[in-house]
Image (tube, rainbow, N blue to C red; front, side):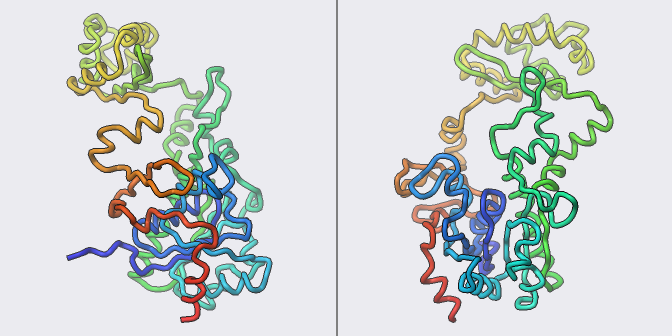
Length: 377
């Protein structure tokens, strides 16, 4: 018996742009939803950020696979009419305009609800629909700064530093996905539509709740690893990270590195002792690790059950033998103008296969004819 994808039959109108909303909608598509991506005539602005791939970009490829695409000019009556018709037949409507813009266009929740009472309506914004910052523009860097993430990632001089990956966008996309899935489950159980408000601000505060609580208990700035000698160390031909959370891991580390003095030093027999005497301990570990090649060290750590990882770059991680063995990545070879690219399988969804429509990334307006024909049915 073939099991249908979880969201088979669910229709989604994705009016979002950038990363957070499109990523959420992509996750829905990977689980079987029919996602119609509606772009302005100039295209989703994420087509033009990052490394270009023809008329698309790496960012666009990452967040829009498995969708169908149509353009609509929301400044025209014809474009608005197409979007309203799509929404009238949809289960989910997603938008990422600033607060109030959708209402002014006649595409707000109340207007949509009047046509489709069971619609789940999801808005993704920087700071939410209400409050003094609701009309502010928001970017990844703005939210890293606002939410405290930059302070938790200081540079070598202690100055706040942006993490060089759009953490707020993808975190918000994941939070939006779970919010949407929860709402669809609620609708299935109890009926009725839903109005969902997901902001990058709220997602990032939720993501960092532990840090916020920690700073209330201890307002001093971050001091590096809370559990030394946890950290990243330079080996002869690369870097390795070790994570020493329990006593047996510390003893295993000392055994592998031939450091019996550290293993028996009375000052280092507890987490508190290792914190108080971290400098000398870490200096000895650095010297010991520097002579190892990373593959040999990794093998020794694995045999001793020491939590660790070789520090990979993205190409190395994508080609790791474990990644290949569990089919974490499907290498897609038919992206025009690009070499084979790694598309990561979504946990819980069926793994991508050759010619899988969920791996196709739409060209702009490429499904106009079939989408318009469906609206006339």
